[in-house]
Amino acid sequence: MLYALLEFDCEEYINPTCGRDDGVQNKITEVTEAPSLSRTPSSRRSRNRNGKPELEAVCLWRNGLNCRRIRISPAVLRQASYGTIKIGTYNTLKKLFVSDPEDETMVINVFCGVVSGVLSSSLANPTDVLKIRMQAQGSLLQGSMMSNFISIYQTEGTRGLWRGVIPTAQRAAIVVGVELPVYDITKKHLIHSGLMGDTVFTHFISSFTCGLAGALASNPVDVVRTRMMNQRVLAGNPLYKGTLDGLMQTWKNEGFFALYKGFWPNWLRLGPWNIIFFITFEQLKKLPL
Image (cartoon, rainbow, N blue to C red):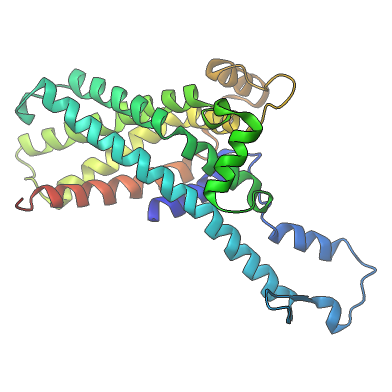
């Protein structure tokens, strides 16, 4: 849940087209752009679900909370499916290559991370598309997550649910191929150095380091991926032909640092997620079966 809360807010920083369109902004615009409205108390009132009048501020607050709740649900669904497949596949693949964790190498860990990242992101791509669409369009997407899945399928077909799967898989390959091996190697070296044991502090430093490494490696692909998944191609040609084209166009038109838009919120998203996950995961590993 924490990761989902961080995630939907960070997408607004990463994707400049993902501004607020959640009903709150619309209502504020209507009030500020309508100077001819009467200033009587009734003009500042709207009606709630029961048909009773309520102050405009209460209506704005209520709509804002509804939008946040709509945005969080697909983020939770996406992370639950993607994260479960990713971690399960990574650990299973490592056991296929080595039986003893001490025999793991950087090459093995990176390979397992890349494969698990590609597989998990590809399978969970429909939930990623829904998450980004609902974040970007806010209250324009009505109904449950399932009804929005069906709507995307009916409008754009199966390809619509897997739109952007290539940059998503590329991004996941980079993130997982960096984060998980960096965590394992950092933890291994800290323990072997004799400075630290297999403690919570060791897990904290390792997870902090892998979150930073993942954010640095993935942010350019993350920017392009979000933009590609948010573009709806119903007629005509897409803005970006592929990940490389998106990277080059963004660099050419907006400068190199445009590829690192949203880096700090991206790191603030990856950092807490990795710290909470790995510390919890390590403690659960120590529990007797």
